[in-house]
Image 1 (tube, rainbow, N blue to C red):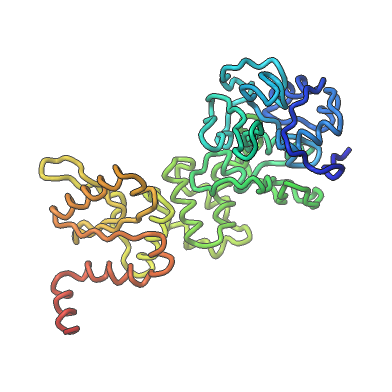
Image 2: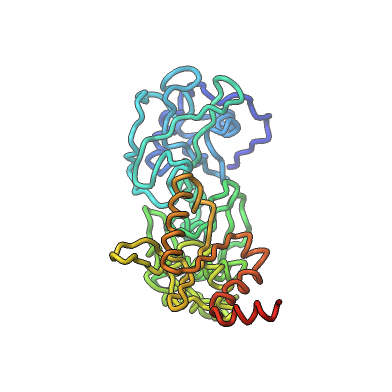
Length: 396
């Protein structure tokens, strides 16, 4: 049985009517991790028209055919008063705590910090600011969309970027609401690509599947292998490996490399795996390090601690050449995004200068557009004073 949104145009206000079947439908969705199937919603007493209004008003989501995603929290009082609206009735006006009957997963955090994985206050409807009395719904957790995508697919395993988000991979890009759920199926099954889902077809090896709060997911090692093989560039692949190692999502790369070995696209990545370093703290730092490695200036130390004469730590250097007292910093916007951070960075730079360290700072723009300037600057410092004086004499 299918569900179509084409029968009417979207309404201009959220759905706030009290539907007889809404409360049992919401209760069932909550027990199922924020997901309810079309047949279950109809059996609870909702009609096609009511489901259509809930979806078109953005109170419910219909990411895949045959299933809906329902917000796990109520508004403090809908347009028509407390307890009314698509979350059902009987809600207390005070914020509740998330106490669902299933464990939280990494991808369940509400964007904007409303609900952290593992618990937190349930988010209310947020005013849109466009029309008085009109409210925007909270975002839908990734795990609920995944559960909806798994309906009717008992052999499916969540994989790729979707698995990475559920497992808490720190290098994953921010979630795009329009992004499909990636599922892995045995190659013998149908290869039709349904709406809202991206199907991949292969067999998993032993130990390459784990259970995460009732959701079948590729193991961290297999997930990292998938990310590396699908990466658009060497820099992106190594950044994924660096972030996974640093966060501890994978203890080492041995299992991930074995999971990638022999698969399509593995051969070009063979030289990338030894370049990973879990000490890297950002993707920009990884890109900067690889640029210098390619130029023959591999930094001997990452996150090098520097102390003053009294033994007090004053800095931790991104890329360091201690023998030459050279520090290369990868500057992101967050490095100096506040007045306090700006002051601390300047204080840190002055302390390093007093200890005769040379500090070179580069941004993402430098790495993307002026890589030759970065290499030249590092080369000049590592060459030493005598070489710099000879260069200046030759130039004069």
